[in-house]
Image 1: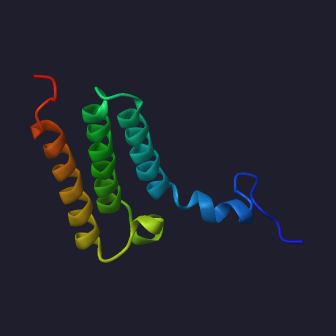
Image 2 (image 1 turned 30 degrees about the vertical axis):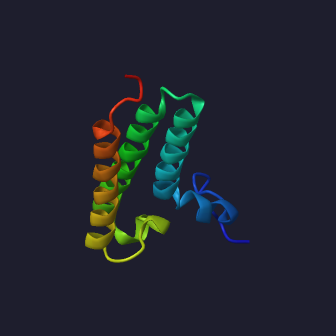
Length: 103
């Protein structure tokens, strides 16, 4: 029987735990959607949370080595960072620029 370090997660958990960068982004986007769906006044804050989560994803992809990026890596590092950053800026800009409905 092979010896394992007590701090090492079992093999069944090793795969899902490696996907933490994507999980952070997905959790942030889900939280933003939940905030936006709470009421008609919260859509702007929810959109800002979604944009911030995508921005965090861009920083994670930029900072993490290829082996640790998990499913956050789709194409090359410059492409992934640019795509996430452009989407983050676009969503945040739209959330700030769209005028309020109450006039």
